[in-house]
Amino acid sequence: FMRKNIAWVQSHHWLCIALILIQFLVYHQTLAGKKYGRKMKLIKKIKAPSFKLKSTNDEKIDLKSIKSNYIVLYFYPKDDTPGCTIETNDFNKLLKEFKKLDCEVYGISKDDIKSHKKFKTKYKIKFDLLADEEKKMIKSYKVWEKKKFLGVEFMGIVRTTFLLDKKRNIIKTWKNVKVKDHAKDVLNTLKSI
Image 1 (cartoon, rainbow, N blue to C red):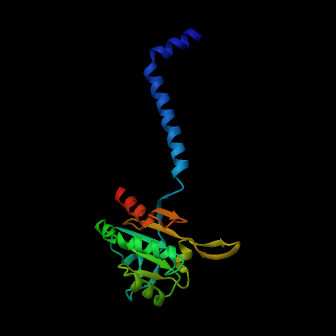
Image 2: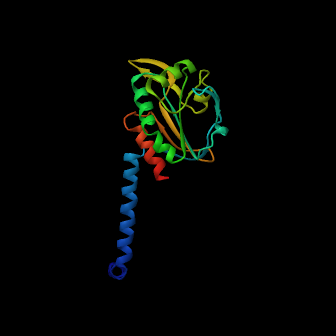
Image 3: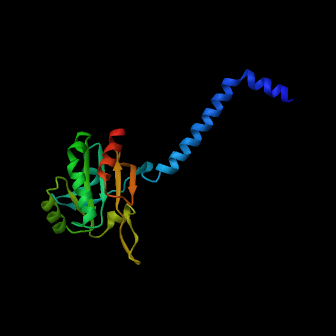
């Protein structure tokens, strides 16, 4: 029995090598997924919830009226706070690159329009900020969650970014965003599509 098995392996050695290689690649991809999968969550063919919100351009923006192929919607906690300022400025610096890829960028928080306009003017932001004071869009995109700071629990916006395609499906989402290089990461993802 052993001799037959050895003879079979010897006569099919290339097949055996191929099977071992496939197993190695599957194992390696599994490890890579565990290591890198948390950074960016992939979502396929989930329709983005519709919205209609006041904008810093003095008009109401709704999802259907946006004509670009792609849309970046980034939700942030509060105007003119350190992390939100870094994130917004980074998207602003890369706005031309997003535009080249036919992508509009919108920042959303529960601040009112007066606060948004002050924030936009102060940092010369070239894209529109949307005001969701009633938290309808914030809740429909499921970014209003329980948070904890210095042992105190409270409800607030979890810093989250969504990338939408032409059919207004959510194709990528980043949750609990770390602001450093985040805008660049979103741009690189868009370039890879």
